[in-house]
Length: 153
Length: 293
Image (cartoon, rainbow over all chains, first blue to last red; front, side, top):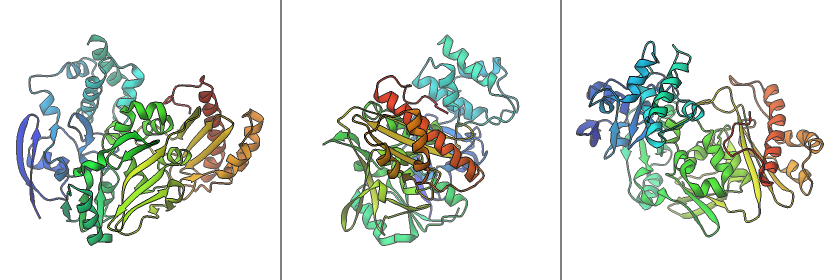
């Protein structure tokens, strides 16, 4: 049976009818047109579907849409509402990604880290992104880009 | 994923009534990091999902009357952020840090981890060496179960129909102590443990040892605890203790490691964890959370 859920998506109120067995990732991508979270492994292991739930990164592929009723969701689209963030600019400058499929997830994880800890060291950065898989690069430029932002802040 | 009815009760009373009514055709939802995967795979197909995240009284995390009360809704991230957990229950803090990654820990709960009852449950060895108690509520009332009696097989617990785990209680230790949890895995991130060992050394040469991922259930190694009791830990003593510790486990081969490798590494990691616990007791060990493998 469908039920109505209400939540905040990238700062705007959203009201939508969902079935309890629909995942947040599918509702975001297929019904709300928010395409930055990606369907990678579909079981919470690769981090490509990461979004912020009340400021904390979660896996939208293993979250039911009904769970976010009354909560606040932020995706990449919300982070870059007023143009690219310093972190995104740093990713560009460092040529951190190749295919880019994992980039939204890394951006969400690194944004959460920098919000909680503006000056992380390399170990803290590697720990924060340990749940995000990138299959093109060797993580070096990703870590370098985040370190760069951490040093400038 | 199969269709199901979704309930989000606001009180424990409502939740136990629902769970009692729907029984085996229902599943309890906390973080969902395990359940939603199983439901997606079609391994678990409930008619009813009862989301416990609306229940305020399950949100507890406090030290009271000599026990740390970890409510069912407490996530691993919340445990890691708690200064009380870090200072007084550092093995639980350390184990929480080695669970999956931030994006999972932000949602996954310790109670959920215990109720999933997988052999590799990272939080279990820490709870075993700290003599934690599982508190379950049902229509019949409350029941307290020592964690050492809680697991009965892979994904099986002693919980009866209609029982909901409301919290885990962990007794405070008044004496000086040191502990450690070491997780041996292939990489950091979402990987499950190949071997997990928690040890505890309490002033007066008292020791506790527990393993995960190397037996059908997370286990306490009581025989080696007895052997070590009253003795000073030395390399020679640990060499003698290793085969006794390994009597408690019966690893299998799987995609992550062979049983032979697990058996050998269980001894290595046990000795390293015990030495670390003693050093921490003496105040000169590595920081809690440092990687020791």
